[in-house]
Image (cartoon, rainbow, N blue to C red; front, side):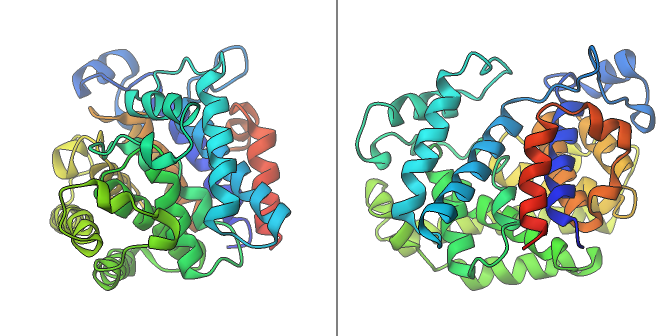
Length: 338
């Protein structure tokens, strides 16, 4: 898709904005306030559809990757980590960081402002969805090798969330975006993701992660990686079971999880996309009208749908309203141009 990057970046921000007012509410409460899921509106206040920390941090990742490539011509941990750290700490200090940010991200970013080694700042036991709600830009950057995409996806997660499942789910989220942008069909997607997870489950990206695995109770780095991929593969199995008996009108969180943790956010975001693979707007509405981490689930769904369908997937008035539209479109146009 020629505009996959623009479509995914805007789609994720739209999902984030749509899920902003529904997060922390039950399906019944969302129904009462907004009506049925098929009619869920994009919330616009004074002409702006406001986003949350999900899009703020996705932009941080996107800008860090852009700047690393501009400075070094290639992507590696030595060039990327300081730029990610700078952007994450800038986000932590910003007065705009008032959109219900995750506690793990706040704690880790404060640590990143104080310590030399990022491994000393990360929250080792956390696999919250903050690890992968922001990773989709790495599935959109042209020219990355498989190692660069996977290593950078896991590194950006590991700066705040040190649990191996957060790393694995982030890696797989970026891969899902990459596959969809490259033309993989919805019917093949889950099988491709399962094959990728199985092929990479014993791989520890030491070049990117350093001694992170040594700080856990796992006997070795391979065991650390396997633990994360096992939980991520289990989430894919739940997704496959849900897709075998799909229910458009049931809360998607009942099928694949509430999305507060990384592997569930990935599975539920994919579930909403794959329920409605040819109707991006309906897919994002279905994701935002959910009882769990609605903004993160819908942000992931929007990234998947936008990667598949491109920028034309989204209504023009929605694109015009979404906060940070110009920055999102500038990054997207750069990567769409190759």
